[in-house]
Length: 384
Image (cartoon, rainbow, N blue to C red; front, top):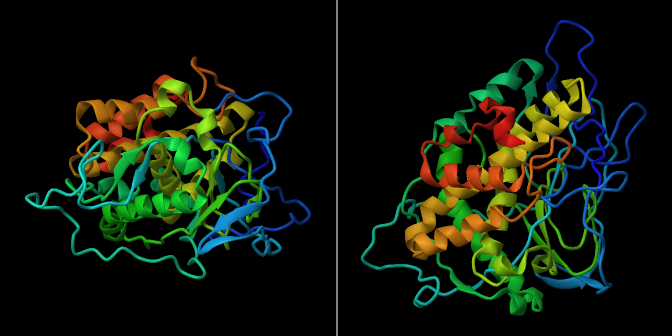
């Protein structure tokens, strides 16, 4: 898969000393002088002169949308208006750890211990809005502060937080889209319970993305989805998360036969949604546009992906006790991040290589506050 690098910040640069504002990313056919942006995928090696994404496999004919199976539909597209920011975060991911939503079972992934006091129990997990609110508006003058001194970095995720999930193998879930939808929705509940109060404390708005499960490519606000893939689409009227039913096929067998892969993938995708709400994706888009070389642009994307891995590790730290992961479970989760992408450092790849991905997920898991996930303060060697 190659990486196409049109500007992710299609708004015009300032033509005068003032500071224009950006926000409310929109999607549609580019107008003259504009370009579309689709962030590269979760971590598989890329090859020159191809679109981002895995090859599209086999042709099941329907997509599971919120509320059940329905024929494939295309979310409405709107024409872009200058200035515009188009942020489409796509992550190539795998599935495996499939769980049942049970609060009274132990087993491979024990859940709630009635003797344990959990944090954020008074937080009301939100439902998905019919239309997502706009992203924060920023100026070019805000970019460095957003990326280096974001208020989110001052927050510390509480420990422990309740997450009512138990683990199960992936093949059955991949074959049952309704069960997959239920599983992902339950994982999203956990993510919101962990992250919601911290997002609000940083001054940002908590938004629950809608979930879409598909078994053949479908259209969304960021274009056409790929099989063997998962995606957060940050287009203005989308801001949703998409999962292909065949995701397990991208993992090596030793990872794809263990638990917690689905959760790791969802944590990564939701981290991109958090980056959108905290204006990080918009600021990254500005840095991408200002970069003078293709390699410099690619490193902006790498930093975005490394931070999503770090945020994922921070989430698992919060629910580690509830899920009763222990040392073995932690290793299993970190192996998800350590088995995606290239095995050696590659400047041209849009994601960090395997060792660095595992390092960032571990850093998020082992450290507080969230400032440890400030990847724009990291060296190039740490995100390559």
